[in-house]
Length: 451
Image 1 (cartoon, rainbow, N blue to C red):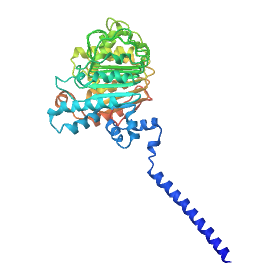
Image 2: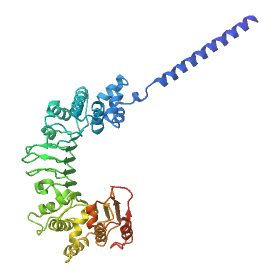
Image 3: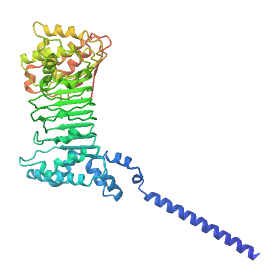
Image 4: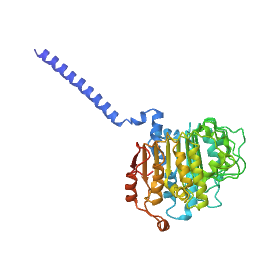
């Protein structure tokens, strides 16, 4: 009897110890699970996608968490040294003393050098947007800037974005124009030297030049896959010769088009953006010898027009109005027309001349636009000339279905404008909403969002 009780007690004690060991192991697993860094266990490509969502400064801070995160930082595929990066350096070293700007610049370049020297693997994107003006004696080359671009072009870079505030002070290394992996290139504020005719960027699809000084001679790259090309505020005394037969989007603002080569392959362009500076010259270039010749027909479906000209005299305004009408004539496939209403005073100067020659010609041309269904009108301030210009458009295009009018970012009217212009946003808005359009399907919408 006593022996049976003793065996039962031993079994109960054994079961209790087994149960205790089981729970102890389970609790240890739970504690270990709570201490585990699950994010660090994600695949490297997922970690990289997480880091590229952060600024460069934020991504660098994660590198101090562990050796694992440090390795992820050193393999980051997108290096963006933009406004946030330089402002962080300036905040750390400047202390509101203007004379320290070159110290901040030196420290910024030192950090970038160090990051590139320690980097491993592929760099898909390299962005350098330098926001400060430097002293005349400052030299980009003294900080190894010329070594950065050869380095990234040899590491599989697909996107390069370079912007400097000292326009034309830095000459771009030619290695960029021989990079086989490059798909997107944006250059701002630098000088580009002539290239030889054999220079080819086989995979480039997007190319943007802003405030570029083409330093004499012809630019001769062959870009067979180029889809989008932009010129903004560029300077050149020679032809810009670019071979791009698959180009579908072309933007030219504040540059004289006479320097653009016809090798652009305009027959493939579906989206075209021009301003008053380039509009007349663009049409003139197409005709070969002036507006009287019959220009070739374009396949443009989306046309965007703006005005960076400022105030223009009557002679220039008449030339621009002629070019505007000719451009509509040679774009019979137009489906969407976007106009910045800063452009409207230029056109209105001639649309309402005593003889109404431009108005009659414009009306005759627009009657043939059977595909134009969308009209976007931006920067509406309620000016009388803007309202008249919009009414002319609404009374001319027969196939319109959607008209979106977007107010200007700032509704402030300067004293000079108020002297010769009548502004009344609400009154003119009601007049436009009640206007009887040529198209019975047209719906006028006033957008609350600024462009």
